[in-house]
Length: 226
Image 1 (spheres, rainbow, N blue to C red):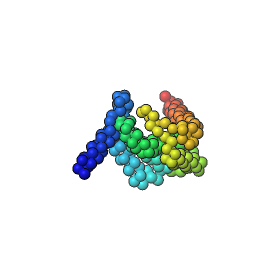
Image 2 (spheres, helix red, strand yellow):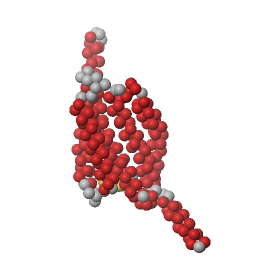
Image 3 (tube, rainbow, N blue to C red):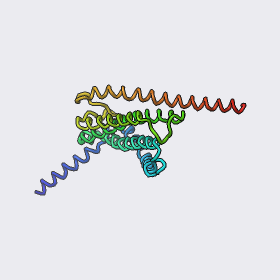
């Protein structure tokens, strides 16, 4: 019995030690450590920012700040899951042992990343409308509200479907769709249709804001006789 218990203990110790075997690729270890090292100091910042924006009555009453808080929460979530992914990169045996957890973390990280794009688009468009004094910061057009709801529904659906089918995996130092899984090729293509237009709208909107502010500044200078 003692010999059997000793054998089991040795087997358990070997299993645990194998989980913490470092990645043989030194570059990947460095990148994994970088993920964790950059993410950890940001966590308190996001925690304080999120707390302030959810407890301050004036900020909560402002639609723009509420939308900005959604953006902060999404980034906070990405920060946390970058730490988890970083550990799996450093310890690849842990990823293989807990594949379901690794794939779920990858799916969640990807979904949080996708969630940024509708929020960025709505924020940029609403800021143009506020700058042009078409709307007030406390009121959002129904179309923008509908757009952000659709964005969240899509992101949540992608996340739930991904967790169910386990369609995301760690690929080197990043995450990627496992194209052998149901619906993965389609979702991979759809990301382009979501992300690229959102980036174009966001960048275009802020460019218009800069031009508008520059034009207003020039008009003021002319009026003052400079």
